[in-house]
Image (cartoon, rainbow, N blue to C red; front, side, top):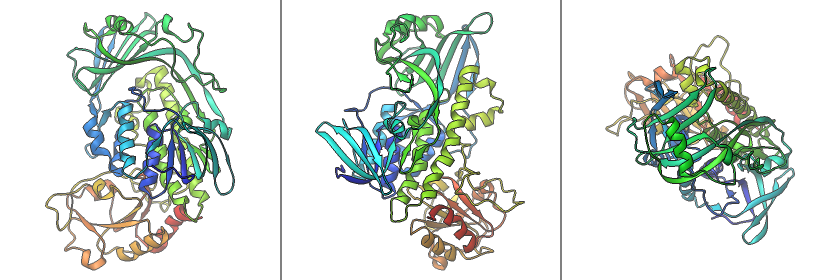
Length: 549
């Protein structure tokens, strides 16, 4: 465990967002320390929905196998109104999307990420709390309280992944505008013995004559026989308002997350099940319960100077659609490679500024959408069902208007454009393996990647492009050649580059390739350039947007 007084990045908060940031930094070769005020992980199934896009990120990191083995599939939702089934909603994605929806308790997500981080020799420093910080032109000085007393840490950068009541956000003086929902809810992690289809969530409501919902039960399946995380409206005797305890006063009036006070009992949960469960059932094996409240807020900017915020420190919103933790993980993935690149001799302020420019619009959209869905229901969304599901899966997040992408020439109608998520595809073969690979297999564990499609590009050769990419990226970019299905022969002796054949034609179809083209793939899985014909001059213009000063 790193215990020195200086490091590239100090991370406050060891939840899923902070752990993702730390793991991605270490994977990119940057040093970091990650501190958390809690002495141990909390054993609570808080955030449980894992979106397909998050699984793609974990695939790139090299963590997805462990996650798939620990999680269960989320197949859809059963809906009931006043005891009458309203139908079944299936979570079906296009066949080229490599992962479906999953359910995994937050403490398991944190365990997997912490163990993965440990592979790089970095561990979480527990019972260590950030209390203040100052920054200057070369770094940040942070003051911690630890089990051993006070400590001063010098770092190039500081990132607050410290939740809705973030010390880092307050220290930066960021605004956190929004509001709170008046309703309170209770959560419980329990087991039930009904015979409903496995892998399906349950949403059961009672509506009054005018359509108002006055009773609610939402059940999300968890790993384990008959195990669910249930949420429901809180009875008056358990409400924070009834106790005159509206949550911790953090100076910002943020009422969001778990409350203290009396926790719901099995008897409290059973009363709701007796009213709303689709079948007569008895709850048992209560692992954890709490009362919680919901706010919706967004910072005015995601950082200032050398200090940044991510996850709940930057955006909080209703849990509708399981967007919060997943959005925060994507924050961390976006920020990590930029910090790692800027931790060297070149500060790259434009690259760091792109974090706010790319991620704050995403946070704004997620906050707005989840608030709408919480108030009006997902069915009120004007999108068609297929688009709605892709958006909930976070597969439509992109940066076409971001500062790092090289725009396509006027009139280029390519469907896959700079700023888009790079899709997966299958059927890639080489001259050795007896089985085909997927594109994500090629990208796994790598950072910046140049993909050159075509044996003899109409522009410069693949070898010329690869050499330029290495030089312009300070040696960070790797290159692969994707041969068309009908291209003769191999390429290794000709270029010295690894090559794969698009034997099934999936790469050409999903990437919309009609002529020799090169693609620049970022470490977070987004396309930063599409070059057709691929030339060193155009590649230079693209990479200067990323690696320039």
